[in-house]
Length: 245
Image (tube, rainbow, N blue to C red):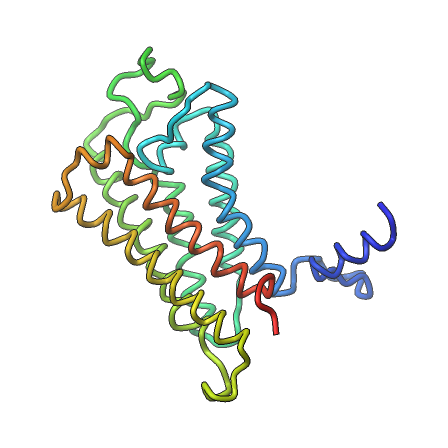
């Protein structure tokens, strides 16, 4: 790698070699970029790698169901990384830290309490992509609903951050740059899309939307993808990847 490419990469990642006793990932901008990238690539990686592994040409019922497949490692690793990065994210004020911290905790709980099985029987020949099956017990229903709850709280925290925290400024609206105005519009749009996705899923749980739509389209997967992509874009912009002053 040439020196110019190394310099560009170091600048993008905010790597400082002057302090040899410090670790690399201490810059909040770098952390935001990594969180944004990880969030946006996760649905794509899950779909592509399961297609390459098993030839499955359609998405599963939900992103969480990839936990039970051959690509479960991607789901667990990325979501766990997101969780830990959100937990250590500090922000500028205590409210930034606490909301991000709880979002990270909720993300970990999503991993620790997986959703329901892909199939009702183990070794289902019609669903060969399912390589893991959790025993059905009295706690299975609790685990499933707890998973839905913490997943919803995870996105609610991220939506709150995008709408209320990322849009903060020490300048009046008239003094803000055009780039800041554009960024705030993106933050709010992403927050609304996340909230919309949560509402659609909640409406489905209450059967206000026919369950057939969730199986035919599959609506849960696309709503989760919409929320994750919105979350990722919001953090990428916050990391000054786009529309930087």
